[in-house]
Amino acid sequence: MSVQLTVEQTAFLQGPLSMNVGAVGRDGWPCVCRAQGVMVARDRRTLTVLLSASRGRALIDAVDAGSGITLVVSRPSTHATLQLKASAATRATTGAAQRACSARCVAAFADELKGLGYGAGLEQALAALLPTDDLLALRFAPEIVFDQTPGPDAGRVLART
Amino acid sequence: MKISLESLRPCLDGAIPAVVATSAQDGTPNVAYASQVHFVDAEHVALSYQFFSKTRENVLAHPYAQVQVVEPGSFRHFRLKLHYIRTETEGPLFEYMKAQLAGIAAQTHMDKVFVLRGADIYRVLDIESVDPHIPPPPPPSDALLSLRRTLDRLGDTTDLSDLADRGLAALTAGFGIRHALLLMLDEAGAALYTLGSLGYPDSGIGAEVKVGEGLIGVAARERIPIRINYRTGDYAYQTAMRATHATEPRIPLPVLANPHSRIAVPLIHGGRLLGVLYAESEHDAFFSHADEDALVIYARHLAALVAQAACEPDDAEPAHDEPATRPTGAPLAVRYFAADHSVFIDNDYLIKGVAGSILWTLLNEHARNGRRDFCNRELRRDPRLPLPDFGDNLETRLILLQRRLAERCPTIALEKTGRGRFRLNIGRPLQLSA
Image (cartoon, rainbow over all chains, first blue to last red; front, side, top):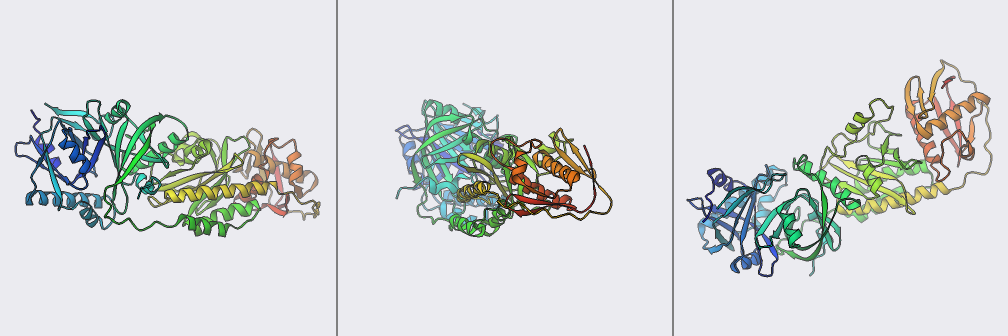
C-alpha cells in the first residue's frame, strides 16, 4: 500500500527544491546523497528520484541490498520541507525524459539560490556538479509523508498508509 | 589523499545548510537539515540540538550518522561519517554555538525557531570527497599575512595609550577591519570598559559592557573567541542597554546598528583576562575561521604588551611643579555623586566609577592647594580612591579619563609629563559640589 500525494504536495515537488535521498547500508551506516530531480507518477502514488550514479554509489548499494529509502525536499526560499519514506525502492530506467527533468530541476534550484544571493556562476557550478550523463533512477511508493519544515512541529505526519 | 577536517572549515560556517542522515533502530533511514555543524577540533564536530527530533532519537539509539556539507564558492560536497559521543548543555563550546546559531538563524529568518538546547559532539571517522573532479574555490585571503601586516603596523610600543590606538588602527591595514573596539576588564572583573575605538562617529570611550552581556560579555565570561557571520538581533547591545538602564547615566557603546559580521576575542595573558578585542563589519561572512585564528594570536600579543606596559616602572625623577596661571571666565559647575563616583560637568554626564573618583580627587587637590602635577604612585596609595589591592588598572583608567575629558570637556585636561606622571590643566574656574 502507498499513500496518494495531494495535489499541493505534487505541485511542491515540481518546484525549485534542494533534494536529498537517504538509506541505510547493510553494515548499518546511514548514507545520504543529493538528488537532482524527482518525477511524480500520474496516480500520485509513486515517485522516481534521480541521482548521479557515481555520487550515490553507497546509497544505491544500500537500496539494492534492501534498505528503506527517504527523500527530503526543501524549498530554500521558504524552508518548507517534506520527507517521504518507503520501506523499499527499485531501480528504474533513465532516458531523455529523466535527463530533461534533472536539467530542469537543477536549473530551477540554481535560480532559487541565485535569488537568495548565493553568487554568480551558480548555474554552471551546479550543472558541473550534477550532470545528467550518469543519471540513475530509483522508484518508490511513499508509505509515510512528514512535514519537515524547521521548527517544533517538524516531524508531523501528513499522510501514512 | 586523506582529507583533513581542518581543510573543511569553510564548509562549517553555516553558509550552505548541511544534511544529516541517521538510522532508526529498525533500519529506517532519516535525513534532516542540520542548522549548524561546528568545527570542534581536528577529530570532532558538534551539531546543534534544538528540538527533540527524529535525528536525535535515532542517534541516541544508534550513534552513527553521515553528514553532507557543501563548500561555499565551489559547491563541492563532502560526506562525514560520524559517531555520536555526548551532549554539552553549558560551557564555552555551547556558548559559542549558541551565539553562532543566532547568526545563522537570523540569516535564514528563523530567529524565533532556532534556540540551542545542546551541542551534540561527534567524532569524525571518515571524510569522503563526493566531487573530486571539481576544482576548489580560489584561496581566501592569507590570514597569516594579514596578521604579520597588523603586527608590523602595531610595533612594540609599551605606552598604553599608544597601544590602544595603534592596536586598533593596525587592524585596518592587516585585516581590512574598519570598526573595532578595545575594552578592558574592570577592577572587580564584573564589567569591561571601552578604552579605544575605531571607525565610529562617537568614540564611545568609557562605554561599559557587563561580563556575560552580549557578544563581548559572553566572550569575556567564557574566555573564548566568538564569531557571528550574519546579522542577528540576538547579542545586540543598544536594545538591551536602553531597556535595562534607562535612568542610569552611561555612555552608549558605539557599535553598528546592524552589523552583518562580528567577532569578539578575549585578551588573555598569564591566565588572566585583561579585556576583549571586538570587530564588526557591514558585510556578511567577513571573518573566516582563519581570521579568527589570526585575531586570537593578535589578541594574545596585545594582551602581553598591555601586561608589559603595566609593569614598566614610573619615572624616578620628581615632577617639576609648574605654577598655574589662574583661569578666568565663567565657572564650570562640577558635581560629584559619591554613590557611583559619577561626575557631571555643567549637568552633563562625564564619567563614573574609578575614573570619576580619580577626577574628583584631583580637582579637590587642585582647589585646596593649587597642585597641578601628580604621579600614579600617590594615587595608588590614596585611600579616597576605590582601587583594588591586587592588579593595577590605574594607568588604563587615567587614559580613559584623559580621553573622555578631551572629548567632552577639553577645558579640563590631563597632560602626560612622564611615565607615571601627569599634569592637570584647567582653563576655567571650577565650582565643585558633592
